[in-house]
Image (tube, rainbow, N blue to C red; front, top):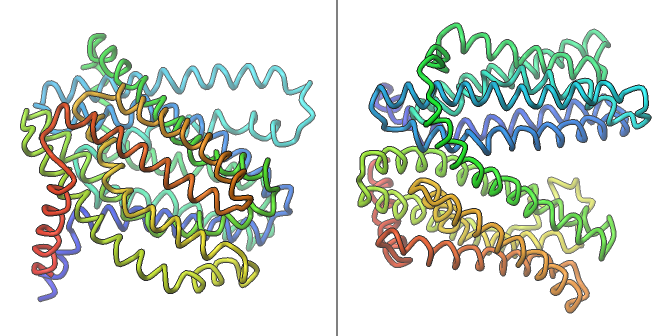
Length: 439
């Protein structure tokens, strides 16, 4: 019986879910340490630095992350080595260009007076360099569906960071500069361990080819645009609500936004495993399997989100009060959480439509999809808040945005694949029941 239980825990979905949960948990611990130990100014500087790093990382990941899974997963050995070598070469080139840009910033340091910019210029380049091998390893491991290895690699990276910060705190040397230094050193540790055990296949860099690199860059340019616009979709509410209703409304809106991590953890996990399986099927020219995987994962998550939504409708006040320490009791936060959770029911189908478009080599359509969503988001948020005279306009606009993206992606994808909403729900329900019977 113990052996049977352990084998079930090695399921790729469970391991992927655990990997995302571990990252979220360590993230909360990290920010808890920072808020406890740093001044508001230093916390703000750290967040500014992370935002800048996130933008640069989204550029590198946008070009190469999905492309690694799409072209590498399921490919025959010669093609796989060629793709992986090309990915390594392009990752080094892109990171090198970022370092050149950062070097230009160093030349301007004598003329910069903003402390946040000074810290960012000093540390962002070396941080991107330290995370380069670790990033490529993560993309390859995801394509190989080695989620157990991803889990321990993430634990090494995040766990060593937390341990280093706790030691610095104990020695009374926990400062912004020391935190940035050890952030780089723990990235180096993770990258070094991965390289020593050959997790990234860096030796294949000699197998790169100009044709494959061109193919990857052509695919990646649309995925990069999709990533950047997706980031704008997430931040549009902050800017518009702040402009129309003030920072207090943004604070209220941030509580349900944080609680939506409960949805994003399983969603990111299933998208990660589903994307790899779809890429493998597509590279083996099995479109029927691609369609089945889309129906299975999108359908299962849709059915799982329905009871979660019902629970939130009745119990939203509890997590809102816990997260905000009761500061937002009696505000719109709980009702907004209910509204956003209702919208989340259609997240799985919308998200998997986008993933499928990338996998079947239609990233341009997926890019157009997020452009439509951004346009609807901006117009609808302004319009809904203006006519409703309330912060409730923001979640209403979010629902309209998701419906627009779902509709556009669904009808575009049907030009290349045979499926419909009914197939998704039926397949998802059947697979969920089978999953339940297996324990």
